[in-house]
Length: 208
Image (cartoon, rainbow, N blue to C red; front, side, top):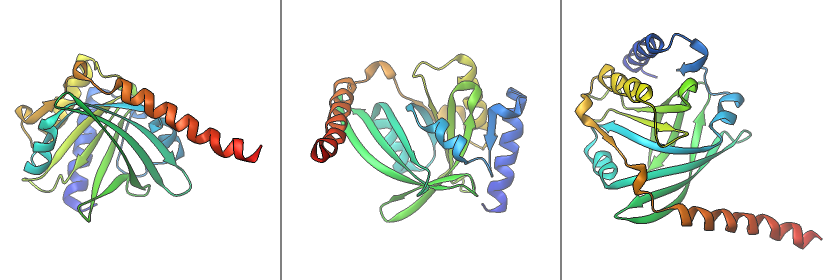
């Protein structure tokens, strides 16, 4: 990470530690991404909200009514599969994609429009949540998102996120929260899980 980003991330760590002094519950920067971290991330997550200054990303978030996703890490290839369920205009949109894992830098990456985008991973174990920090050195494009294992987050976690947003140089008014009660992807998720089960059965039946 560039020096400016490192300094911002370290100062953010100090803020989060002030919120919760238990060091084991807050991990930021290197070397946080190990097999234990990836095993912890292997779960169903709910996108809670984000503060994003990049106008393109902000426009995309504003369209989202609700988002949840499943993470399946590949510990050998240092990648993770994301199975995403987006509720947009009262319709469910399913998407599967892969992220790269940079263990030594504590970052995740994804190709968007042919460009590799990096995000710093901030783990909040106590809250069952993690944040992703984007382009913190860019005053016009920086962003911070919050994801949690439960859609109905506690007031404490909401406050932690709001203070973190302000600490990296954005205004609390920039935060866009989604409404988990508007979820329209329950049936789609059920169908997808059944399809995956059938797909796993077929090779086994062929070997019988």
